[in-house]
Image (tube, rainbow, N blue to C red; front, side):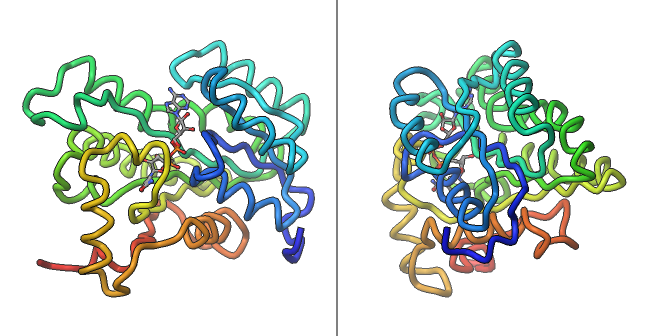
Length: 260
Ligand code: NAD
């Protein structure tokens, strides 16, 4: 721990790390540097093998399976967090999923199941996890929640398709949750991150082109780093971001300001 320890005694739930490239893992490391205690989830046994050693390396007391579509797993997760930590200060929601065929084909061909799956896993899960986190955050006297979005929520990005619709819903959920939970001293924000190479990114056709376009056209003429996204996550979660809620903050080398 080389940080200032300003989050000593705080507790965070990180949903979900897949491997050491995950944005969730970057944010978790930034929180750990500041002394925060962490709980982790993983999706399925194959990913457990990647996540467990990472979580253990930062002393996590909870390393639990969590498929957000499975109510019983979500229930068990929050019981485990309550038992281990008693309260919760921070929730990192870093989840997205859409059927591969819906990220390649024609948008008009999106199936009803594909649409519902993308929206359920990538957007509704913020609402359901926040609802479960509420009692634990109230015990802490408030809390802060951060989720991850992308520019395809707002503008058309080829191949992003149904995920763009899910991210638009996600950003809107952030605003409604922020409005409703503000009086409980709970803040809710999104980071709209520029492209970074992760497992989820590997599922998006033309991802290399997305990265090249940012490098050529964004004001900073480069892509963002995982550390830059993670530091913004830390900022929004911690008291440094205390006056900010309901916001979608761009960490994208300035790409979103372009008009053409
Ligand atoms: P990642 O693959 O490391 O993380 C995605 C996580 O979602 C994985 O841990 C996966 O297990 C989890 N997940 C998928 N379906 C789930 C389910 N049903 N239940 C529980 N967990 C589930 O990739 P990442 O790029 O770090 O993605 C994290 C977030 O960042 C996503 O919301 C993604 O859309 C967003 N984001 C990524 C980029 C990028 O370029 N990588 C850019 C902007 C936003």
